[in-house]
Length: 71
Image (cartoon, rainbow, N blue to C red; front, side, top):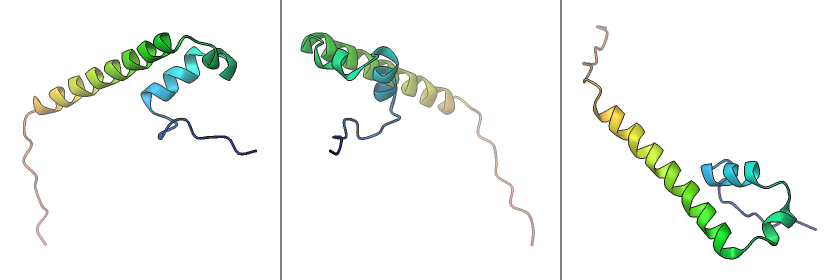
């Protein structure tokens, strides 16, 4: 029997958080749907905020002129 793919990206922040938080598929299956939804939303929001902070830090870097070697 083939297992259904749950996450489009197995190594996404949300997927890794689920793997880390829950010990078994049964634990997920019997979890209250509202609690699971809140858990996933929180993890996605945290990942988004981290990404935005990272992007903002890149924007603050000074521009470095690129130098092409002479041929």
